[in-house]
Image (cartoon, rainbow, N blue to C red):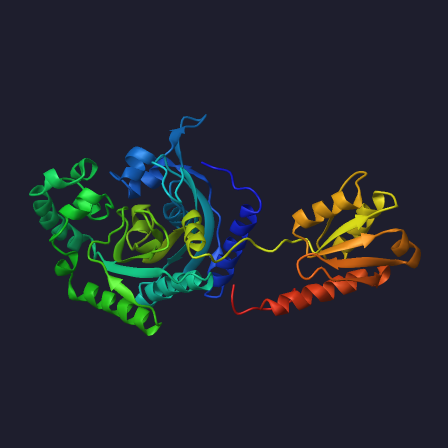
Length: 427
C-alpha cells in the first residue's frame, strides 16, 4: 500500500473528475458503496478464485460476523441493486478502493484504486458496444494512443460447462508444462487457466480448444453484433479466444484494453464484460448486466509511458508578496481574492521579498501580486507573470480581482479549456 501525495493526488482527482464527466454524458450517475461487505457477497460470486481463497482481507467483526474489505466493486454494486431495486436501466459509475493480499507489481498494490461502470437491466448488444467504446474514447481523451482492444465471448453457463470438459481434457495432457498454480485449477476451474498470464502456462496453452466452437446461434449473434458495433464506432478490436475473466459471474462478451506503453507482463488498463447471472447469484431476479473496471494506477502508468495527462495546473492564480508593511497585509489581500472566486496563497511570518518569491515560484501560481511601499502609496499592486516571460504591470488595487479573472479566462481559452462555468466537448 502507498501514499499519494501532492501534486500526484491532484492528478488522480482530475482523472476521476474527467471519468465522471465522460460517462455522465452517457447517463451514468455516481454511486458509492461500503468499503466493507459481508464475506458472503464475494464468496457467492468468486468461489474457488484466487481473490476469495488467497487474496481477500476478511475477519470477524465485534458482532462475530465474517466481513471483508472489498477486493472488487462489481459484486458490491450488484448487492446494492438487489437490496434497493432501482428502476432499470440502472447506469452507475464509481471510483473506489480495493484490497487484495497479492504480490505487488507495476501499477498494482495491495490497496489499489479503480474507476468502473456498471449497467443493470439491458440485454442488448448495443449496451456492450456503448460501454466498450466509451472506455476506449475515455482513454483516447487522455491522449493515450498505444492501446489495443481485445474481445471474446464466453457464452452462457451451458456452453462453458461443455467447453470446460474439453479444455480440462486438453490441459491434463499438458499439466506438467503448466505453472504449478495453474495446474491446481485444471480439475475444478479449467477456464481460469486461460486467464493466466504466467509464461509457462501461456506457452502450454498453444493449440488449446476454442470456446467459440461451443456457442449456440444466439450467443454468436450477440457477439457478432458487438463486433459490428465496435467497428461502426471506428474502433479496431481483435478477437482473443483465450480471453476470459477470473470471476465466475461473467457471461457472453468479455474485453480488455491493453497499453503497449507499460513495460510489464500485466499491461491491461481496463477490462470487464457481461455478467447476466450475478444479480441472481446474489438473491435477486434474473437481470442482465454489463460493466468494467479500470485501475487508476495502471492508467496513470500508461499516461506516463506516453508522456500525456501530466500534473494539473496549480489551483492558485496569485501568490501575494508584500514588503515594507505588516504580514497581515498578505493575509487580508489573499482572503479578498479568494472571496472574489480566485485562487490565492501567501507566505507566513517576517520574510524577505526574495524568500517570498521562492515560495511563490514553488506554489505553481501563474502570477505574483507584489505590494511594496511605492505600490502602497499609489493604491496599486504589481502583477508579475511567473510562468511566461516575467512581464509585470501595475494595476489599481481595487481592479486586481477583475484583472486576474480576465487573465485566467484568457489562459483557459488559449489552452483550449472553457472559462469557469462554461462547457467543453472534452473532459
